[in-house]
Amino acid sequence: MPVDTRPALRTRLHRWGSTETTAGALLLIAAAAALVWANSPWRGAYAALSDAVVGPAALHLDLTVAHWAADGLLAIFFFVVGVELKHELVAGSLRRPQQAAVPVLAAVGGMALPAVVFAVTVTLLGDPAAQGGWAIPTATDIAFALGVLAIFGRGLPVALRVFLLTLAVVDDLLAIGVIAVFYTDTISWPALAASLGAVAVFGLVARTRYARWWLLLPIAAVAWGFMHASGVHATIAGVLLGLTVAARPIHGETESRVHRYEHLVRPISALVALPVFALFAAGVNLVDGDGVAAIFTEPVLPAVVGGLLIGKIAGVLGVTALVTRVTPLRLPDAIGLRDLLPVGFLTGIGFTVSLLIAELSYTDATHGDAATLGVLLGTVLAAVLAAATLQWDAHQARQADMNDDGEPDHDHREIGGVDDPG
Image (cartoon, rainbow, N blue to C red; front, side, top):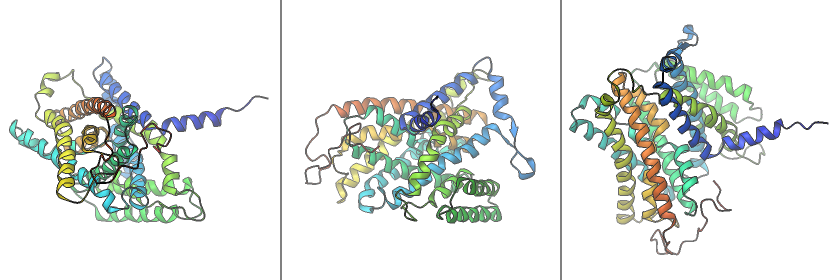
């Protein structure tokens, strides 16, 4: 009698889709495919597919395929961000303010300095009208950054991963606030109220014994639809929905629902939502019009690259060095200031959220293409430099008290070791 191998195959696919390395690799492949397709002899088909309108006009959802990828599919990614945030706030690294203080302040510095670098660069290079893109280099791509750390950070303290995760989660939370506040032109308050009402209903249902996907999915769709109609970027609905999920076990369950929902949704985000978004967001046409030369002369491009590289490093390292020297706050056990050099480069991997903000910042193709190419170049450079500095750091001798708190380090778990939880 033949054995049905489909459950095992689904399990393997699910496990593969849940890893950080898979998410990062698929993002790179999708972005590379977009660039090749957008500049190939078939670039007309790429543009036609991106601009094809799909959806019911009666509900004001007659959007282009590219908009569906950015507004719709990306909400799945932001839902995963939302449940991660909820876990960190309730049961994770953000529940103890003293422990979370240094990475939180590093995240603030890692957002402020890139914005300053961007604003100064476009002004000095003679394009002050491009200031609207100041937030593009402020974001960090959690999946991509953790993927690079998982591959190249073996042998480093596992506390470094927790530090990066905390920093990146706060970074994303701040980026979500920036999108909601600075990239919303007009707000329909009745639609926003209806969306928040649907989010509240979702939260109530998600906490009952009878929470099922076929109940939750329609409610989530209603929340997303009204958020889109309100004028606030629709992906915000994904974050809010994630934040309503219970972060501790309820109804006698052994596992929290944030873990369960993240386990279910993360592969969909990694295997479908993020690659499809990258496919339609990263397709910069370098062939038609004025071509490569024109894009590379746009001040926006070096401003984005400089923000992701110089701004992130200066913000993360500078704020952390200042805080740990003038206040009683210290880095977590087993982490030293030198470990934050690769972390700074890892936070320069903007990609997903940076590409989204680039789309929201500019309506003209000239600035938009330059910003998109800047995100891609900055991300690749940051990833390469992060990989190199992680390898360098892993081969350096470690002191008994790396964080200079006056006590020997106790957490000797290493990334890639048997006790590595991530």
